[in-house]
Length: 166
Image (tube, rainbow, N blue to C red; front, side, top):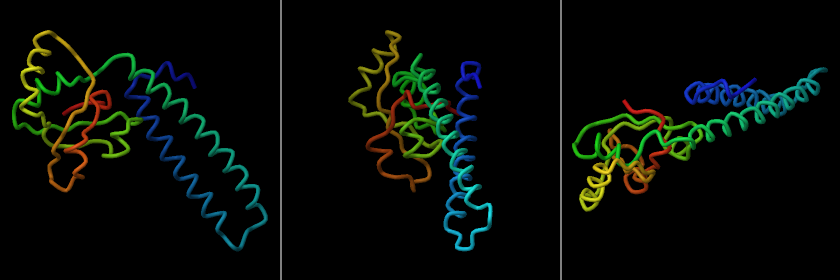
């Protein structure tokens, strides 16, 4: 499969699909290995499953590398963009994360809530916006509902980890 033909969105869809298949195969393997009454072909099936799992892991790694490569080409969302569009008012926004990002692993596929910026950095951010700057940096967030982990409010996530915003 030529991954260069896929755009970032299609690669992420492929990434999610391959990870789901891999999880299913790993569960099936674990179930077979824990079965006390093994049938005649069980060992051969286990061997084939192990090969399929290895193949999927290799393909997933290639997909992840291509996602990271494409994401590194350009910053899709910047701190200044987030500040200008969502940080100056109490407006709710849904942020979706790149599937290979730390934010995706920590917070899940997306968060919904309000972007938080310290009032002390407003002058600097306003100047950056005026100058047309686009920088990666931490975006802090208060998710609605309040059940979200406190870590989202204090540690946030990188602007480069955002896939899309609604």
